[in-house]
Length: 442
Image (cartoon, rainbow, N blue to C red; front, side, top):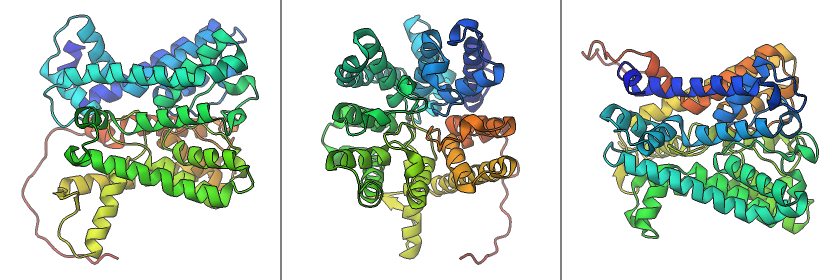
């Protein structure tokens, strides 16, 4: 890794690391003893599944429980764990455990991978991320274990608790509940307090970002001392959970018993950002509810987290900028802190990239497959947001459409800006300023 690092930028290391892991996962899933049939998967099927796992998306073209065997399941959950915590995070952890020195270039790459604010203390932060991740996943598994043990027996119940805890924390959404009914996700546990609470808590915890964890660990309940970014992430996350949940409670699940109605409303608000589990039949949700879910999938989680999407901070910056324009203020600000113009430009770029990818992919798939545009946009939002929710059309899509989804999943995980920065030269070119002229907008 050290020798390779010297000729590559941090962005290039990240995207190549994800690509290498996807390829390795594909080769392992092609082995005859990875599938129930014993014949192995085709390269394309293995590639799609590996991409979905590494990019913690959850879209599948075969039911995970019934198509893959235990070896295949172990490979998939390992890919999810590494993809969720990040290639660079795991690589640095291995270097530390082996006693090797972490040079400045590797620390810089790690900083970019987890969206840290500085290089200093990055190795210590890596240890914190690894330990905290495993601890949270263990707690989640312990909460769900009694339910799954009662349902599937001791050994299988423990394995299911561990598998789904990792999948939820890493915001992957891949499940083994096909043993109940193919592609059924968690619909058999609708209203179950232990499973619903554990899965939602894991999704949110994994989605708020590693740097937010550190802020909470350092400052505990002294919220005033949190970094501005942590305050923005927590307040935005809370709003994106409560507001959609209120809509789902009153307009989508009004026919359910109270217990199931509350849990389902909260779950449907949390899972699009960006886990991909579901406890209700998604095809029965109205078009308005489907559109809200699409928006939540595109927003996703927060920077430096296991979640994908354009990120909560991007949404917050754009909304605050809009308010600043309305109020004729010169600057965008949060909690008494001004936001730089570079941050606003990056947020606008990310927003436009996600919208462009989401719409272009949906338009192409709809035209190629002859399917409803809304259903196709749902799948592309799920792919680029690395969510995994589906209206059931993914398994039946043609090769071109599946390739589009693979590309969207990959771009959504490594990050659009990371991909662009890795392909552009380091030179900034001519730094002279051109004459300025006004253009009317709006």
